[in-house]
Amino acid sequence: MSPLPRFHRLPAERRDAILGVARARFAADGPETASYNRIIEAAGISKTAAYQYFDGRDDLLGAVLADVLDRLLAALGPWTPAAGPEDLWARLEAGTGALAAHLAAHPDDLALAARAVRETDGAAGGWTGWFDALVTDGQRLGVIRTDVDRDLLVGATEAVLRAADTWALGRAADGRDAPDTSQVWRLLAGLWGGERA
Image 1: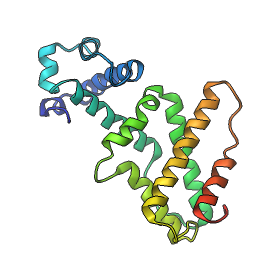
Image 2: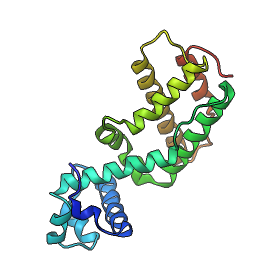
Image 3: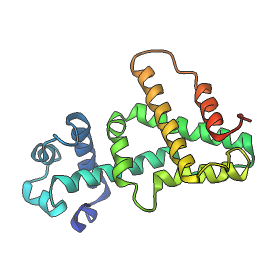
Image 4: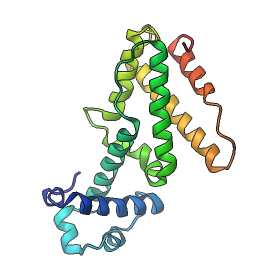
């Protein structure tokens, strides 16, 4: 499911505005219950125009989820090979910190993030690809073990960091002090079979 070609020919600002309205409605009302008619009305497009952009509600949701994933990846930034173990940890902290800040500032993305990753990551695996690159780099540097199946390590690393984001953002939402993120790094170091440099 993806938007029809005519949607892609709209000016970028108009596409972003439509996706922004839809993202807010899907986040607030839930992907299963948000009203397609209310979304297109709030976006200022007629039913006729809407059906020139999307085959229906599912296409619009798919476009929103793909956009959310792009926004998450942009916040995270690409993984680039680290110069050494300390640099790997510093890059990991910087990337995950930027993502957490983005999610805190964009609650609509937070509400749709898990579904966006699950349903739109695709074969190229932009999201999974980031974690795969991290594990590859960590193994190259001797930070991450090589005695465990690589796909399992990638999935477990992603799961730990997703849980850490949820934990940290939950504390912030409750008005509690910022979490001690050294716990996350110790957890990852234990998973990876070593200690943090």
